Amino acid sequence: MTKMKIYPDSHVELSHFISNNYDNVMDITSLGFYGIFIKRVIADMNIQPDDAIMDLGCGTGRNAELIHRYLNKNGSITGLDISELMKSQFTRRFRNIRQVEFLQQRIDIPFELSRSFDKVFISFVIHGFPNEVRHVVIQNAYNHLKPGGSFFILDFSEFDINAIHWLHRLIFKTIECKYAFDFIRRDWKSLLSKHGFDDFVEHYYVMKYVRLLRALKKK
Image (cartoon, rainbow, N blue to C red):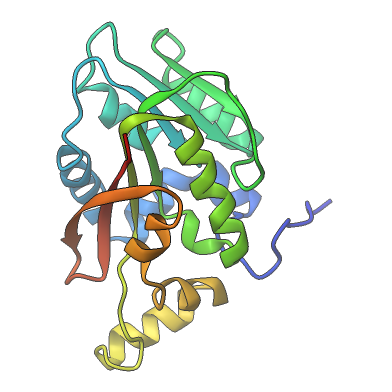
């Protein structure tokens, strides 16, 4: 029986097949580029050895595995995802590592973990939500960050879909959901400022179509 999607128009809720083969799908569809790309992204996050990091929509734990390499025994990662299949892959990947935990938790509704983090990371998830839901995700990040903590959003940058190369426009229109078209039109620094973030830093990739946006929680 097919599981009903929470947001039928979204592409971030994956099918059983893609969820079960997610890392391989990413490698194949990116022609092997994803592995190199995400290493560069994680390096740009300036992770400190004793950071406590929350990974929203953590998936299989592939990104968390790269993050973990920067941590010492005092650092930790808490991955959140709704998917049972992602939980299975994530916990298998970190079965012998106590510093890394998985919580099966929706990130699109308010939640409380009763602890705070130095960094919160979300990768190619937030664009797939309706805009009103994105505000909930941002507030969850804010509520769980220490004062001065960093919120990292890895996702599409802001661009005019009608002004980019025709081939890139065709690819975007073919693979992305309607929420992504809204996402790239938003002023994300202004939006994050309204939630109490400032001191923004941007890193761009993939012909500037992709951005790692860092925002600090005001002290």
